[in-house]
Length: 162
Image 1 (cartoon, rainbow, N blue to C red):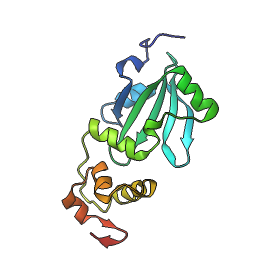
Image 2: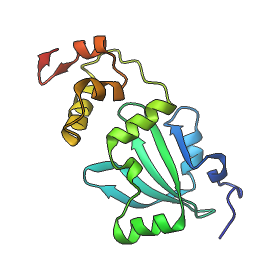
Image 3: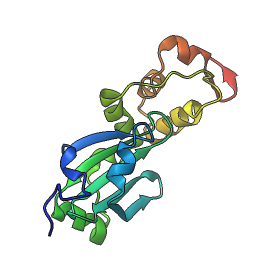
Image 4: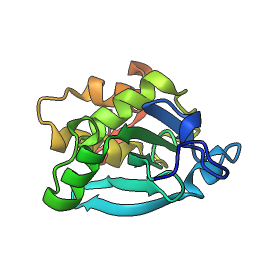
């Protein structure tokens, strides 16, 4: 096994829980140049996959959000956790709900400025969040995508103006 930080490996640049913007400054391209997809959760967790570094063999749980933040959320995994994903489809729980991915990215990133609230992924993302968690209030779902009460009032959900 190679040590993290060898030539071409970016794994040691990132803490155990990290985020990388998509396409902003090339950090994502540098990091993922040595990461190979090992497993994809699929199904209702379309955003979630397991990758491993081709240089140091470090495993990463990757949550990919191209709807709201355009960022990757990374979690460094130990070999046992990576093996459980591959052999038993048992994933660490912190990225299993898109709600939790957005909540974590909201702590780490800046929310985007939406120019046209109704011509964006906001409506269907809010709907999906509420379907996945019926206890989630509309205002809380809107907060996860960065909308305040005024913006939420302008959003057309279910074809109605709110």
